[in-house]
Amino acid sequence: MNTDFRYKVAFVTGGAGGIGYATARAFAEAGAAVAIAGDHEDAAKSAAATLTKAGYRALGLRCDVADEASVAAAIDATVGAFGRLDFAYNNAGLHAPSVETADALASDFDRVIAVNLRGVWACMKHELRQMRKQGSGAIVNCSSQSGLAGIAGLGAYTASKHGVIGLTKAAALEYARKGIRINAICPGTVDTPMVAKAMADHPAEMQAVIDDIPLGRMGTPEEIASAVLWLCSPGAGFMIGQVVAPDGGYTAR
Image 1 (tube, rainbow, N blue to C red):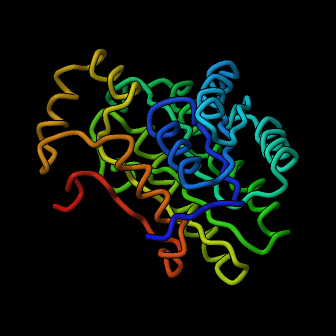
Image 2: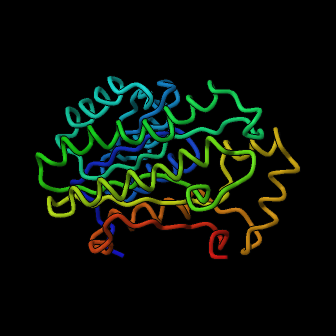
């Protein structure tokens, strides 16, 4: 796999921790300059500072993906700092409380859709405007195993992640002949702070999910990051509008 990304620039949302940070670091280790975007500015800047101290080029930015103006400003800042945008990993997302659909709150549904689906749309919109100028680029949108299979109690989350796949496929067809590749990744249960919180809030339900993984364990952030980098690499040059599911076999059944 050729992941020599020297002279390239990557933008990662939700990049201060978990899968996002592992991916940002992987981009940096491959030679790319990296913009780490997050809704908590201090955390994003701290993550970027860690990479900078290790000798990499990194920038920490505040970016609330549910606010299109915030997204546009973060992309502008990335291009202003590094001159271009070659890769984007639209990773930011959140869960809603696990609840039966009849008991769900509209406010929870709206928030999940605003971040997980509309946020991906807003990020792609502004990433694509820059990539279209360049005539090149690769975008990976983060869906989930819940984008391929239903999970009881997670209706809003499941709907948002299914939507990401549809959005990815539509945009991928629009830009396939314009030098821009767009694909989606559907991680399974990964050992991240968000999963740790879900484990604390719903231990029985989450343990059942983990026990049901054919591989017998959760994934690691680094395993997901490697799939993202491959989708951005020349080795995935024929991948357009595809869904890659590093999920330990969960959706293989």
